[in-house]
Image 1 (tube, protein in one colour):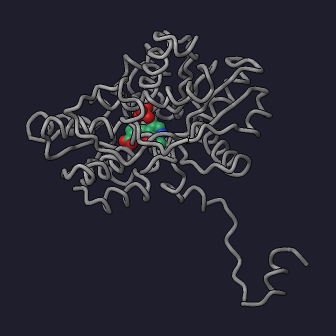
Image 2: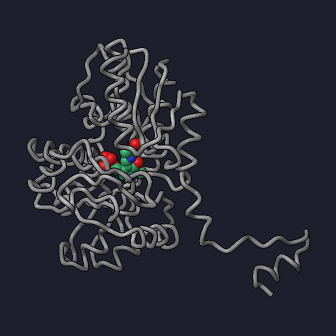
Length: 351
Ligand code: F0G
């Protein structure tokens, strides 16, 4: 038993790094694979949660960022840029600090959660709120990276997916083989593509005997894969996946089809119900977008896409503290009491 050394050190031989790559790390990865007791009971399956909110900046983006920023450093970059619904910008900002780089982020005005905005600002990123949605931000970031000396660290940067594929390695390493089914939220579609890369790589090298069916879930108001074409004005309370024109379109379709999986839609109402279920019955606080994977597993089980007894992993992608508004709204207002044991006991219903 030894201390976790971060992704690049743990999976060095499976990542595009050499002796010449300066490793920029916050010791990301090594996140819990938590048995989900209540969701297993509800579905009759063996369900696990891959708790990616336990990463250093609170989301799975750190896996991609350690590799992308390390490679940018190797190439001599002094500045990085990204478009983001919040988590990528939080991660890029933190890793840029670690690398001694400047970081610019483009976010859709008014549509990113407060905790994520705080992260980018506290790490000193140059933040622009764009009068547009995420798809507009990404188009802008791509243009700027072509015309100015800044490295683009969105998931169109191939090193991002290389880092993110390690989550699949960790799951196989923990379970001893791949699960039957893997569920995750889909936004810009990088993560589903990265997991599929990781699972197929392990299967090709006989580390795993099989690959899982990949089940991706989009919010119903932002579900271009379900519609079969980009959505011009995506809408969902799950701001992290409020994306209408996913960059990794072809890779995600390949992951879906080659794995025998599906990409479906869940409503905001289903997402919020799963969000509360995770918090109140599993003890896991995630941001709304993350709950799409759990809303999805419940729906897929009902629709017969998953059989009883199957082993299922759900990635919960981001920490609930990033977007506390949804936790507070809908909860009863706290009661104020005097410094008095009797008053406290009576307010708590103990008397
Ligand atoms: N869950 C969370 C919490 C996310 O932040 C994202 C994407 C996704 C799921 C979807 O992953 O894009 O790889 O399909 N967030 C990006 C961002 C877009 O800017 O932070 P995906």
